[in-house]
Image (cartoon, rainbow, N blue to C red; front, side, top):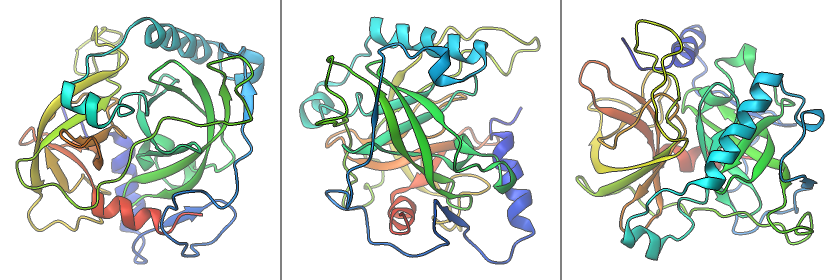
Length: 302
């Protein structure tokens, strides 16, 4: 059974009928180039405060999804994953900057700026252009269990990347929002890793065994999982800017359904060098979005 998400296959169908190349959808704009991600955003985002455990009247989620949010939040607050010593020393926020999608469709994201800019895979936000809703509220949880809501700022089906902005967040310390709001974040690497370089992947493996013959079989995996591996180069003959069918980056960190959007970090520096997106069911090689594609995507952000 293929572990390439069905939504990614839907993207391929949509792209097959288009000869225009990369499609980038920006909130309130129409493919207007913008400068690279700044060290400080031009305008401070308006982030409202949420209770530690947001009630269903605020999330407006179906009851099952809301209960799942609270269940995942409880697990994240109760358990912590073990972090390699070097990563903990050089990138203390690497794990705390990782988020999991709170609803049934498991997925992962990472915060790339303390103002609450989140990077994930496009297919975690919408399967294709017809499903894309820039006004939709997405609910996620930081590794600490901190609940946030976010909206999509930019969506690129060809690179398989999406950028979200946190719009509301629960307070860690009473009264710490909205003044002085800051979120743990990771830094983008200057360049691509060397072949064979050590990597760390932090992701959200799905709770249901989708390879089981019966529905509803539990995997028993934790909500957040850290795995180690190495950078295996790029797929031969594939454009690193085109991840619509399968990610061009190759790595061998352990992943499962739900790891889409998981940050791939340099094991030594903790800097972001890619993002897991899929896997090759013929070879077993894990795939992802290359740093080069991430940087080009962010140049077109709002």
